[in-house]
Length: 320
Image (cartoon, rainbow, N blue to C red; front, side):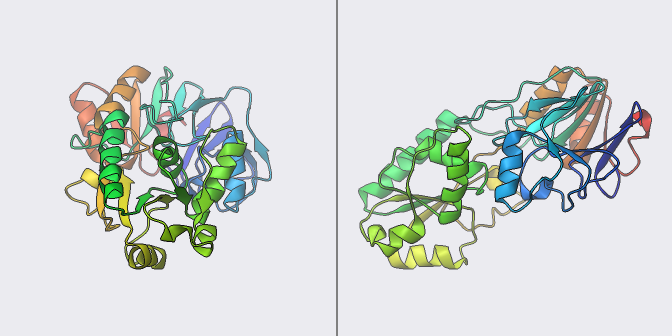
C-alpha cells in the first residue's frame, strides 16, 4: 500500500490498483466509475471495462490511454455496478468493490481461484446480513401501494450510479414514473450500453408541465439530505414521502443520516457472510483486507484458519 493506493510489483511490472493518481510508468487498473475510485490524473495506461470508460467520461473523467484488455490480465465481473471489474493477474485477485448477490440486471460475481486475495470489506462485521432482493421488492411494493392508496407520491432514493438503476428496474412498473434529471442522464447511458431500463420524464420537465401536481407518482432520485432544496420542494409542494436504500440502513452505530422517511437495507457490496464465502471460494493462501472493517474482518478470517491481515503502507512486500 502506498500513498497513491495499492501498488503490486510482480515480474517486472508495476500494477496500480484503483490509484488516486495514474502513473505513467505502470499499468493503472480502474475497477469501476464511482467517484472514489476514479483517479485525478490521466497518464499511463489505464485498464478498465468499456462501461467504466463510458461512465467515467459522462462523469467528467476522460481516460486518454484506455484499454479494456492486456495480456496476462483478466477482468472479472465484480457484480458491484455496471462495468465493475476485479482484476486477476499473476495469481493475485483484486476484488475492487464486489457483490456476489444478483440484483436486477446485475449478476453476482463469480470468484476465481488465486493464491493472493486483496478484498474490500466495507461490511465486514457479522451484524451486516442483507435481505434478499425478493424480500426487498415485497417490502417496498407494499409500502408504495399503501402510500399510493392515500394519494401520496413516493421518491425512491439511491446512489445516482448503481443503486438508482437497480431501483429503476425493480420498481419501474409503478406509474407514472419520473426521474431526477441526473438519474435520467445516467439511466440513458445505461440504456445505450444495453441495459433495459424503463423510460420516464425528468423532474424538471415534469414540474414545468405540471405533471407532478397529478398525484400519486414514483420518482427515482439520488440519495440526498432532507435539507436539500430539491427534497424540501418535493415535500412542501407535493407532500412526497422518501424511501432511502443503503447497506448502512441497518447499522446500529451509524445513523443513516439522510433522514429519509423510510430506510431500506439494500447494498451493492457483499454482506459479512458473502465476504467470508467469497474468501473461502477463492482458495487464497494470503488475504489482504482493504476499505471498511479491515481489522475486524482480518481477525475473523484468522479465527477460521485463513492467513489474513489488513493492507497498510508497505505491507505488500511479501509478494512485491
